[in-house]
Amino acid sequence: MISTHSMNFFVKFTSICVGDKGAYDTARNILGFGLKFRTNQGIWDLLIRDPAKFPILIHSQVRSAVTNLPDPDQAFGFLADNPESLNQFIRTLSDAGISKAKLYLRLSGWLHANAFTGHAYRWIKSDVWNHSCKTLASIARDLGSWVYVKLSCRSNQGTSNFTRTEQAAVQDPYFAAQEIYTSIKSGKFPSWTLFAQVLTPAQASKFRYDVLDVTKEWPSSLVEPHEIGRFEFNKNPSNYFTEVEQLAFSPSNVVQGWAPSDDPILQMRLLAYPDANRYRLGSNYRQIPVNCYMKCPAQISVDNSDCQRSTLADGQIPTTRTVPTKPDQLPDIDYEQPRYFYGNLTSDQKSELINSFVKGLSGVQDHDIRSRVLDVIHHASPELASRISVAL
Image 1: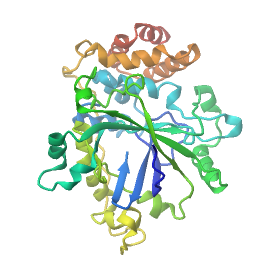
Image 2 (image 1 turned 120 degrees about the horizontal axis):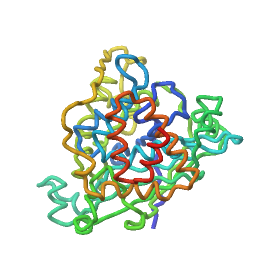
Image 3 (image 1 turned 30 degrees about the vertical axis):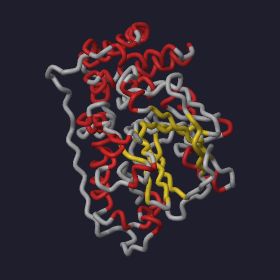
Image 4 (image 1 turned 180 degrees about the vertical axis):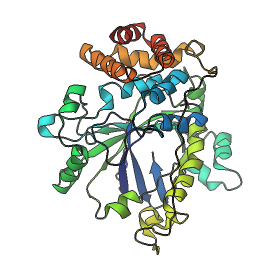
């Protein structure tokens, strides 16, 4: 049964890797949005297997620090060095990487995008909260009172994506932001349905792969999604700076019954996000009204002029050392999901994916990176690797 309890929340849409502030809404990218729920129990923020690789992934996809231009060698060099990232690359370079709706209706990519948490978390039963002698994790393990959970959000507006040809035809670079703003202003409130996939620790221990591996999904055919709620966007910000730019998210903002798992990347983000928020907004960022629990009063400068910030980005040089993880050293299960994804594309969608790979790889100057990327792809799909190679 779904609870009818409701609460207010803030949302921030963002690109994850590629695109500067003000970049085209139609740019091929990993997209996401963060939700900040204001509950009666506090703030709840909903938001590569090796955590040390996470900063490298992000920096590999942005502009070169030397030329300030997109750097294909830098971007595809990460895939060549980290074959387990193919599952993400193959989706980003497919039509799914360009959120869309029908052009003549000018519907927003944001309105037609599904989302998921990526990380696995823990749901902890209420009996655990009555204990104060131990940490939540140890109590839950002792009592068997927790389960693993992954959340996903399905757009009630439906989903669709641009092809490369349609993407190039878009004239308004900010049509996605404009559409969602106009939709809310006109009273056509977009909404998403929230689903949960749940595994007990016993089920997780017998699963086909590590359930905490963020490079893999939990297939719905193996772990059934259960509808647990719905959220609706019904109010635009009245001040974009104070209500959006100053929003600060962290997976360490949790409420009773929700806890992080042992996912190593999630554990890293528990530390990294508050640290980044302090750098960006200042040490008092949790006193800023939009981040404050139940709008506690706070005295801050309007433009946050007391915060000092600097920017430093060192360029990356492709590695020449022997990479510990080679394509043939990864178990075949690491290639299973990208293989399945490609196998279920239509003929036209496969052609779009191949064209995207060819366009990206044709800009790679280092031929060793090209050959290693094709080697990674070959382990998932010899057909895909062959068609890309021929087109190159």
